[in-house]
Image (cartoon, rainbow over all chains, first blue to last red; front, side, top):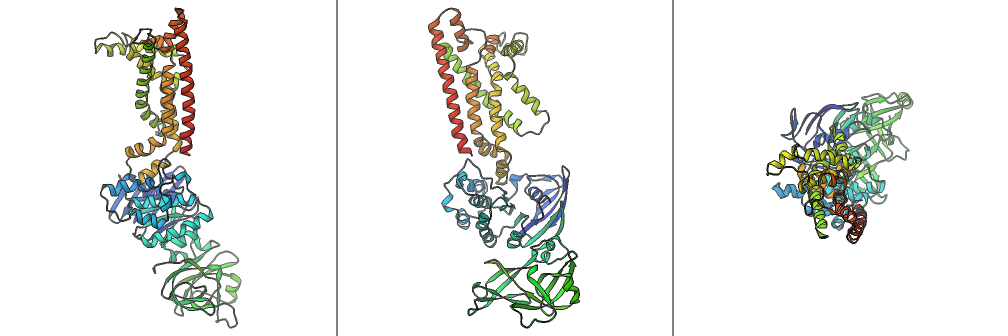
Length: 364
Length: 222
């Protein structure tokens, strides 16, 4: 997927260019008003700026060539579900389906499959007016999928929902990710959502691309604005290695390290995704004896960036050789200087907290 | 005898409504969605009959439809002298006179649902015509109902324009409102009473129906 858009909307200038893999979820992430929705609308053809867009070898826009929206093989999920109020849920679901499968487009996503996946079976004969916000958004996702998209575009599909409905939909989105092979372009300003769903990240600010790359790579770059957010951290793939039932712990293998986390996280060999916040990692020069912290792993400092007068954001790579997974550690400048820490040095990373991001994740 | 003006009026109103729906829908669509700077000027022209005295409109129509105007030239195509004082002339006048009552509610209905449903339809592969037929029209149905009822009723109730360009030719241009005047002038009170009371009941039913429909359709829409 290759995108380049440039133009003005009133006083706001947009100049973006990025490439993203043709599979998995790519998040367009940035603060409100950074132009991410505009970029998504340009990809859909709902808005037109100068530029180019191609998916695989299929060019949708280039110079004077511009394929109209209704001829692009997309699915679009709006912030508000935007269902057709005069049709039943079923008629909504099949609106795009009739116009694709009904005209000879091969059916790769079936009605039954979508209804099951999104749990909307008992809503089919209802009218969209009688649905909750979360239900409406699930139907909207189903409607977009049944149009047999080759690219699914989602514009903050959770932003208009309350916390409760968000938690209701997120698992469905995760399942989509696992079950379907359609690439997704996902607009969001919520880092937690992005970490949970995305594989690839395009970071936008003031109509420009700040950085673009795999999520884990960008998370562990101390120079980027996401590392400055209070909730900065990394999400890492892990594999269940064993259990310690006497203590109720599960041991997870990470690249270059091992974690023990509370609870039974599933059978040995299962893939999991964990999140480690920068504030939950501290650094020590020696392996601390007599500490209650369970997870202490040898690592090497890769980079560091002072954040303000008080704090330093350090990136450490697990393993004595420093070849393993990267984590962020937010430490005070005082302790950083007292311990004489610097990039290249071996340290011990003490992890105070680990959050499970999602139950099921195919290993990246 | 008393039925002739009634039938003529119904015929005129029905034809006017059909023509207005056919002409008014694209016009209302354009007014609702165009970005052209001069569209409000067009909207104003459409709305003029709301404020103009019917006699003014009738006067200009008389000029246009008469033997010396373009209407006269048009009429000469089928050997007539003029479009004034004919049913066709009356129809043209009614269409112009009732246009705001049809165009405005339809335009409002098109504007009420905004761009979003049409954008959704486009992302689901509906061509512009397809989404107009399957999304815009059904979503605007309350506007069409209101427009049709108002257009019909307003045509039934017109008087000034008819008098100016239609005259009082039985079976051709002698519609209800003119017939009532006629009966009063010739002191035929029974007929005048019958038609007037009929119009009163008709108007009451029209407005009541419209209000009920609007409420029902409105509820489905929310």
